[in-house]
Image 1 (cartoon, rainbow, N blue to C red):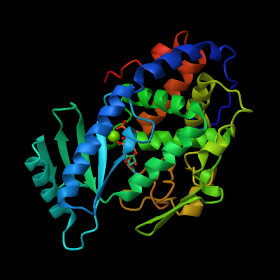
Image 2: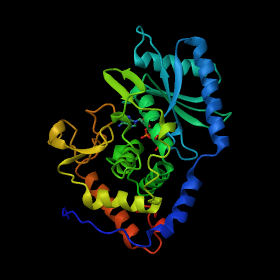
Image 3: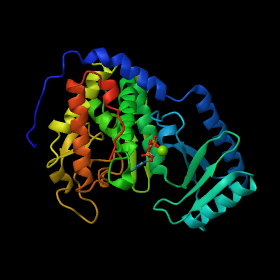
Image 4: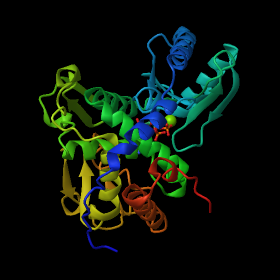
Length: 335
Ligand code: ATP
Ligand code: MG
């Protein structure tokens, strides 16, 4: 089971590309939906700025990183510099402001790990979560969006991987499987290894922000990199094959950490991620690009790692042998 098996990609894999691309097209949000998101952002910003003129509301997560499906919830982050108020006080006050602005279904979740205000807007029909001062998420959202501008295959691959993960129920962090954010990082890493994407954090920095103690610097003039991966002609189906074969048969779960910060595989040993510390078991290691002590695989435990690896193998085998991979891959998981 732990032997690394290297197989040749099936010769006819490319014939499935149109099917995978039509799945991608069906998941992309429409222009109209994006306009509604911006309309809600503008309305909420106006309301909040009346009370807190120096605050700023940011979109982050999948509605802003180019990896959002149609009809997904909106993630917003309020940036506010108020030394007098605690995060929980800000959340409670924010809920009051929204209530007074005639928004409905407002809930302040002050005891959650990340305290948020939830709301459903009747005008646009959109649901959203607002957190406070989580600026690292705003910056990593921009990094993902910038990578997506360089080569179209990243967005296509990540949508299909996310769709697979949601269908197979391995995109549930509270059940010990991986976040959407982690899956996108895994896709970026694969494309870096195949020289379809560069490593923006290793290039001369043109974007420079410090959040808490993290220096977030990278090259963000991505319009200059549009032809970066053009010499590589792999289709999205062969990249999908490569993605699942890597995680099913090639990744060394004992030794390796994937790192988009360096564009390479680095060792667990180097990061001192070789043993369990508290709840960090490091059973699958995915380094956060900015908060480098943070393993995005930390949610995975000894039960869920088994489920995850079995799902990677299932997907790899479907892409290798199945007559109809663009259907079988997404068959819902039935317990
Ligand atoms: P979905 O379409 O499933 O809602 P999403 O892109 O919104 O996907 P989430 O995993 O819900 O993904 O995360 C939302 C955002 O929160 C991410 O884009 C990222 O900015 C931030 N984030 C999520 N998980 C982490 C994490 N473990 N460490 C740092 N930032 C994270
Ligand atoms: Mg989200």
